[in-house]
Length: 573
Image 1 (cartoon, one colour):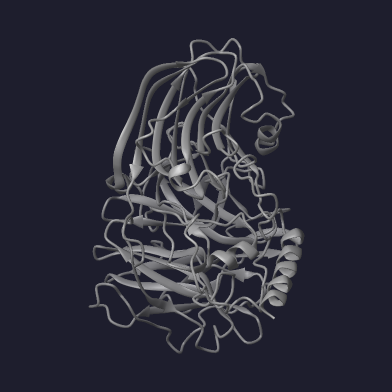
Image 2: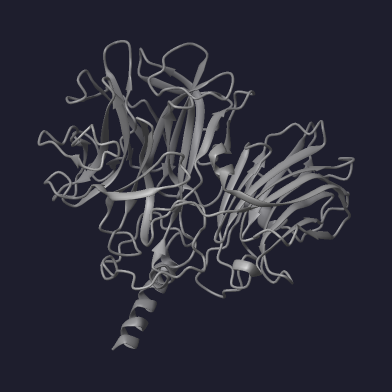
């Protein structure tokens, strides 16, 4: 009987994997048979060492992160009963540094008529009088998506362990909108006209929409006559996020900031593609309109926080350090069968500081400084010239499966750069065509992460430079194609993005956070970021290696490379 059940599970999961969107579902696929199949054992092979994850089972969207009275709170979508999506509650963890985490009891779970079928994503807002409130989407018995709220039961509890859902819920019904596509309320902001405002994601046919709602007392909300913004041919907008960014410096701004010298960012998560895009633009609060700048592509080809396994992100303003923090869900790339076997699925990315590039056209990101407290043993390389076809292993004293690497490359000339074909508009396709082993002029050069000793497996993170008529074009790749020898059941894409960087100094920098089954990389100081989920079979634990490589015809110099073993923090014990 046990073997029969296993075969049935395997066949069902394999079939659903094949019909999904390249292994990443365009909506959460429901597996009723497995939703409450609790993990008997939790396999450690690919579990991360310093990324956020619970001890077992499924997680997805980070919900309503916030800073309150000296404590960071992270709420997240969690299945307490199994390793696939289902039984979703708002799990709750607390931290004083966003590195070490303590798990608490779930903050919100289905219990009332307005959320009996599910407690989905939302956001946190700090009201006047220093009172936190959560806005979230509840699913009622008619499968309608409703916007609800919850408040702490006891504000004197420093951890805000218990939350209550008052009986005047829901706050917003889906009147005049698609009740099955109406979710994920944003952090609310206050305007000088005496109204709070929030956004809710939706769609009308194939047009993505962010509806705007106004309220004087946070309890009675009125939909504006028109959305704050919408865009044709983008599909359902999930997890919208809307916030101001300063035109100068790295400091973040409170979501309700309304002073001068700001731009605004609107980010949406695309249910159809399972990636996100954002625009930078202007908010006209007298008209409740957001207009992207003409330098921001508004659509599927727009800018992304991250060009890899990254979805359902959420930012919050950290008042303790005047910074805006970004969290994202690094969804799995293996099959649901593997998730069930290993007893867990999903992690959150490292929290990142977020600010506007001085060019005003895009955002920059960098891992929070607190992460550096985990750095242990260090290896260094300086002024090392890499000839064409050369690989150099980074010191064997570090734990290559759990490391933080920063490197700056330079090159004597760009004359050998390959010509850029203007039809190459899709960076991911270009990376798939010109991978790390394809000889180039200037590049490919970079890191071979989670590599086996003889390079049967490796995940390369690298740059390749092209020559266009009036500028140079930089391609950054994180290519999972060669990441694992596992023959089936893995999504192994060639993730990539272009890097808008000035090469006058003939330098490029790269930072990669390597953590067993995830490689988070930051190119050119955080201009382009890519997260890859990978599942090596040989390059695991102490058998993982780290190399620097150059497969371009032009020599490349490692000006400075520093790599650290990363220690394990307290993680939801």
